[in-house]
Length: 514
Image 1 (cartoon, rainbow, N blue to C red):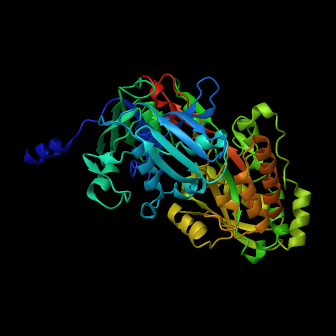
Image 2: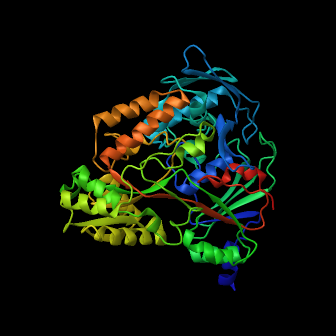
């Protein structure tokens, strides 16, 4: 009986509320530090920026709107200085949000010891953030920047300077309170962190004084269900209300369940084949042109990439829908394809570059799952048609990242590039000569100079023109083979008012109701 009693002592009833099924729990709830995908998503529950990305319920479009800031205005003379006036907002612990919190947050993102993944991005735009008084924040951009580009930059999450009666260090790895903040944070967002059961779930309760309006759901639960088959079964049995991580291959089966709402969105992301130009086989642009012209993007995954409602076919570095998604009112013509699918051209280029009879290994990570396997197998078959023998090799994500992004010891790599804003502002990380994510080894001073011009361009029509020039220039070097962008599905049941338009599903979470 003692043993039985001991078991019941440790048993905990699963929390009730709106339950979101995820493969892993967040590894941190501190938005300054490096986080896994689940942690980055959870940031939206707990924190706000001076501005937030919001989803328009009618159009499904993503827009940056004021959040903690009541107003953000540009100095008409310098055009680099923006002044934000804060709303009267309180932290979840009841303390008032001040301009000092905003300045502290920026300093924490910039602190080298935090190794914030947002540091380089923010630092490329902003030189300083200062508190002028309790409610006034002065943001100095490095160069003139129009409002349509400045506001999205100011969506970085704000954290409090004081936590549990202690002023936090900007080194958020240094002390006990700083480390505690990552697992029991205080924010301003629509939900208040409540509990964390290691390996099982996190619970959040509604913030009744949220700056927009109180959430329609009183409790939200992030529940870990590692196995995707079990996760779908729990969803079928109504023990999970929402599944974020899905595969296009699952949709036909889920459609048969009944009562399922599909929230589909086109992420700011794309699939591509990175080409290691340091390998003699792929050192010449002609060889890389052949690799691009050989690929029929629509034929990559039958039933998925051949569906116009699910797929954007990309014939260049920037996704083909960049202009139509962001500047529809300008009626901008689409990009011209650089090296689109053309079997005859591909065969001719392959012959000229000496690709025939060569061999290569195409790496792809476990995280791409069945879809990645199908893409890789299709690429193998398509490259065989130009005489290039390719072996598709699936690896664990850590091994893949080490070989491709660390050591750069690979031939070809199937990569999912994500984490962009709506304008792909940090595309240079992939294509500048010294870009942090440039794994191809292709470097060109002319391209670097064009990226600099792009960064400095402030008029929308001029920016569109330079973006088009960038697309052409990158295509002339062909460091990678652009493939497709694919819609993502989120499955939900028994949730009203759900609108999802980006990789972060919680942008409209305060509207969700059971």
